[in-house]
Image (cartoon, rainbow, N blue to C red; front, side):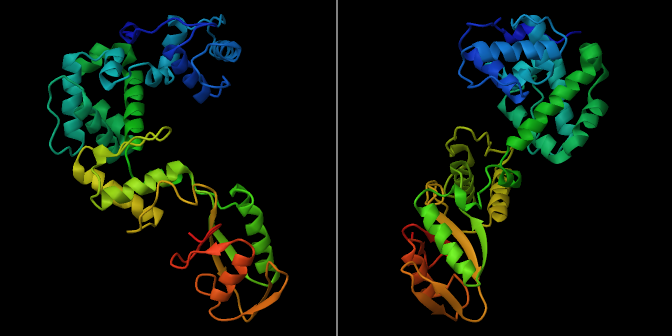
Length: 359
């Protein structure tokens, strides 16, 4: 059987169309690397060109018209995850799963993964079953496709017919998406902290550059560990720490635009473990992390500064200052004073942290 596109209630769109259906289409094109400019829900010239390029590349009628013919292929390439009002139930209906097939899938998830408690095999693939699907991928990873293939009943395979293998591909892709939305250590690699002085705000940037040059000219060894911290990274660090300390429930964490993290796992224990893993990989321990800080404002830098012997450094007033023990930038008050002469101030209780105001 063919996938059931009609259950998606897709709207035919073209140049001049506006609204949510256009936003969904623009996001699909953008992720497929067809330039659409701003995703704004306005099907203008750029979106028309991108649509025609997509159609030409995929041997579709090149009309700029996004109708069932174009949708049918795009859905199989990932547009299904962009459709308005997307849900697990809608996806399964599109793939051809009826109540009996959904029950078979729920029983399958119970068999291939350790879900505690197990899913109710009720034919309703709602939020709990969706969490179970993400948890199953977390446990089984790429093996889940073969798990499905082995455990789904012959009746389900016959119902899906010639679309069976592609249906499993799409279902497995969805499970993977759910898994990687879950909180956990993989989020460390998103929204990385910059180590570039060029990402600092002016005039603090110029002050840091001048102070660093003076230290290097004097023979200091410097490693920059952090400058600008994206607000999205601060959000992840802040709420991972709050969950770990029991200050907020995973389901009560407010969402943040552009950060598609899911803090709520299949079990509370899974949510807490993921938060603990996050604070470990971020290296924040029990330290509070502010949602807004001088790092997010581009007004702070974390340095590891060391030297040997006596550091003969020129301060911001042109005077040569001789600095000995302790030979590091975390403890030496004389170096703090030199930094202040350049407009770069040390926060004494945070070993690597310097800023525009000492906070």
